[in-house]
Image (cartoon, rainbow, N blue to C red; front, top):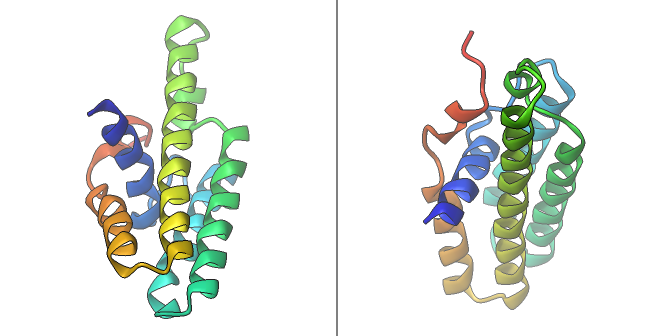
Length: 137
């Protein structure tokens, strides 16, 4: 259940267009780029090669997010709590990346049922989980 929650959190950020930081941060820009790649999947239709390229593009943007720390976490006092928050953030990114890999595998199989199942996992992840790391304005 925890695995689903963490995957849901980051994936919801990717698909909602929201990011883990203020709109002007490098992290926010990378999350928005990943989101854009995934939104373009709708246009790919049954062009599996294009869909795979879009998923891989989103994966690349997500990998770049590992070098950043969300603003909310950055502002925390140094110490164990901050270190745990950073570790949880990276764990969520890794689990989201895994979900994108599952989506890529589904497209590689060219099996519509597998693609639908993988997309359902991604779509179900939308929600309010981003509240963990997004600073309210």
